[in-house]
Image 1 (cartoon, rainbow, N blue to C red):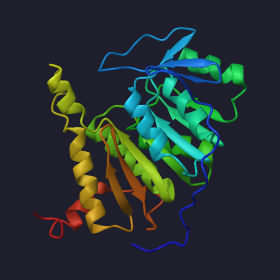
Image 2 (cartoon, rainbow, N blue to C red; image 1 turned 180 degrees about the horizontal axis):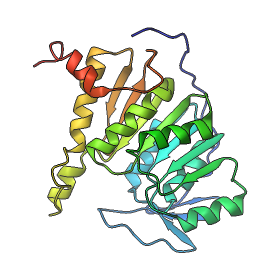
Image 3 (spheres, helix red, strand yellow; image 1 turned 180 degrees about the vertical axis):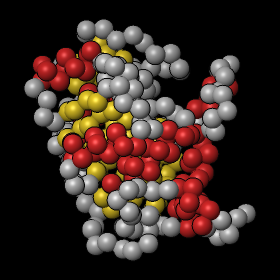
Image 4 (cartoon, rainbow, N blue to C red; image 1 turned 60 degrees about the horizontal axis):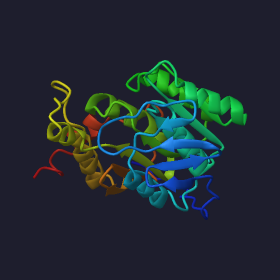
Length: 261
């Protein structure tokens, strides 16, 4: 893979509009976000929006994103919209583009209208993260040719659609850009709580394993992999990638001898 000259950009941390009210509640510009414990999602109300992350989850994000350039950010999977409100206030990007399979998130839409954020916080409802042509359309609409700084995938937690999203979005990150894959241990957690995994779909941690192997063979593509309790971070390297995106399986097959145990 060829090298490109773009260098990772880092800045000092931006001022944050995130205030801790108590251990399970944060406030962002007058909006209270209710955090969770365990796997139970609380219902959102007009006064309090549910954020399906526990306090450790939120603090880990705040620490990992400290000092990172975050002009162009994409979030996949926003549920009620609490995470979009959180990330917008934490990162203060020029553009936060949010993709969600559900048809609406009323509290988020009301927040965008109330704060006048229609030009900075875009929502794309009814969108399947595995729909590569649609994801490319959204990229081009919201960012044009500009690279992404951060991608957060908190959508299906399934191998196949998560892989499809990675293959489209990871190449669009700038060198040094960060790709967060949340809940990579979801299959183990579901089993622990007596819930069935999703049929024959491979576990999400297999995708982490596959991408580790890609990083092993191509550190110029995936420069660094950091595993946290709640998410894995893949850092984009300087390798030039085809505009059509990645084909992870083709990379693994081509490098099978190198990464064979």
